[in-house]
Length: 219
Image (cartoon, rainbow, N blue to C red; front, side, top):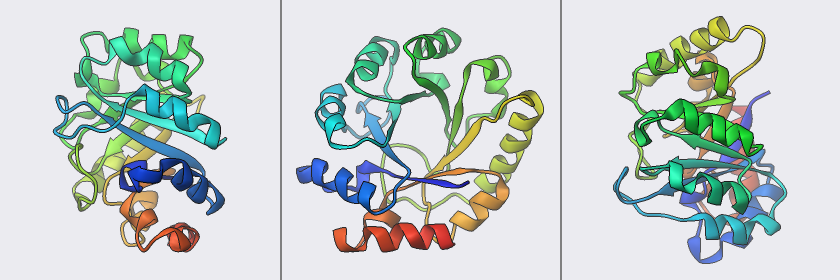
C-alpha cells in the first residue's frame, strides 16, 4: 500500500497545529517534518520544541528528517519530543552505524536519507540497522523544487538492492522532492512505497487538501 505524508515545510507556519489537523483529516498517512540547520543545508526550519508542541495535536506517525550536522547531539531531544522515526544522512556524522543503533535503542524507526549524488553503496554495512530509506529526488534544503528525472533509475536500483540484501524483511522506500500527480506514478512504478509531498498537498488552501491527497492516490 502506498502511503502519503504531507511535508510540513509547505504548510502555513503561522498555524501549524491547524495545518496538521487539517491534513490528518484530509487522509494523510503520516506527517513529514523537515529539520534544517542552515549548515548542512542552506535553510533553517524547526527544532525539537516545535515537534513537542505539536505532538498532542495529531496521532499520526511523525516522520522526522534531520538535515543537520553534527546530528548525534540532537537524537535524544527529537526522540523525546515525539518523533516516531528519525532519518539521518550518512554525511551528517562520523559514526552512522552507531547513530542508527542509538535511534533504534530509543524505540524509534531508523532511516537513512540519500541525496541525489549519494551512492547506494553507503548502505552496504548498515542495511541491518535501517527501517526506511529516504531517497531525495531534489537537492535538500528548499521546498517546491522539480523532480530530478535521473532519480527514477536510482529508485529502481535501490528497490532491487533492498530486496536482495534484506530478503526477510521489508524496508520502506520513501521519496521526497517534486512529488505530484505527474511524477507519483513513475516513482511508484520504480519501486517506492511512501511519498512525501509538500506543494502538491498544500496548494490552493485547506479546503483542497483532501482533493489534493486523493489526486495523488488516484495518480
